[in-house]
Image 1: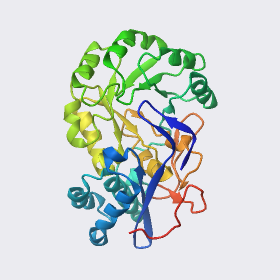
Image 2: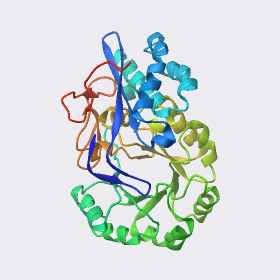
Image 3: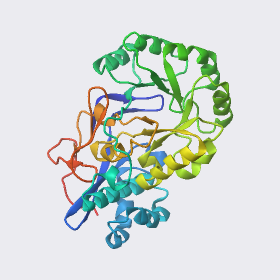
Image 4: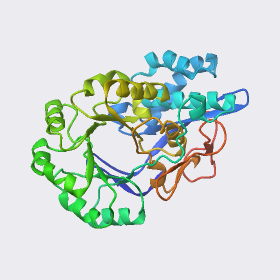
Length: 345
């Protein structure tokens, strides 16, 4: 897939991104999932690895009950624990298939609130100040903008953006900021309309995150530090909330568990996304009624897409695709597909 703009954050630059589209079928129905080729060193997620690992579990998939995706996830997890995007894509496809077989939208099949109308943030990727202002001006009217900053001290970016919107800013450091630089400017951020900070420091900077939260100036949300259910407990006292991403968690099954654990622990929650097409984002959208905040703007950032599914309107509100499951329908004529359609498993 190709983004409308070259995507940059403090950690990396992504002019285009790849993903493996996954189809699981039973009784004439198909469920769809997606595994992003993203942060490959951290998540063991090159296209070659994803395809090979999913092929390795083909016998288990053939024998799986299509109406019990959580049960299938339990069987796959010991095998794919080191390849969470493959595990996640198969779990997403399994939940989509089960919902389609039942004839219900995914959120309804899972007993979740209807997410229609929930507002997503819109991410302003790292660039020159002029380019970042232009990105914001192209999408006026959203209720929350997530701003990527290379350094905590880049206050000039926030000041420039503030000239063109009254909406709050959610500022993301992608685990790349220096603690001393943030503490130097921390008291200025609320005056610029910043309402939260996301993963400002590296995952090993536990003391700095704890100190930042104790300062009480802004809520601090984890991203890279907390990706799976077993890590939620470690966020208590260090962060105020967690950005939950379905693929990082390893699928819908563990993502739902993370939401539950956050609630029980008194942590806030955001439903986030990776660079994904409508296949993955449409599934995540069905969980959006559960979390305190939503960040599913990947489908608004794409220039090419793998198909048709959930959409965000001009104000960033979720509009689900019609039909059972996630509602995603692949478009094999789209230039986003770089390989011919066919069975990969």
